[in-house]
Length: 204
Image (cartoon, rainbow, N blue to C red; front, side):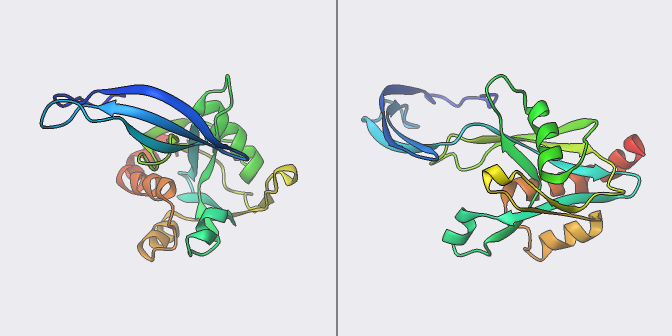
């Protein structure tokens, strides 16, 4: 909530009800909000996909100028008609009492077998603000990719995650060929493209 407010940008929650509860949860909210021309809207109903808050990290080895990306099956990509296996950065849902920094360090070990040292915050973004309450805090993390790679993930959670180390140039070329198609990973790699020289001076 750190954006500057424009005039009459107010919102009021009238009531809420659980519309669906399964692996995830959908809540139906009833709102009134301010109108840009003045006054208030009528009560509107919106279903919101409740997934929790997420964090993600792009492991980067500044000495080798390499990043580690992961690849796994994604049901949403399959249903949307995209390739069902996607290139991503390490990510997860923040648990109660856990910080974003703790989460990405834990997930880096679970998903990629990597220890992440220093973390630099990139952005905290809403992924689909019209339909989902999830935001994702994105980091670039200092890592040693010398012996990284392989297959990781928790079998108990149905995870089968391929880890691939590649040069930053190779990873960025994948964005330009539209081979990385999830927003969090694109943001992290674009940020690194803008700040890479500084990162290499700082972390070598």
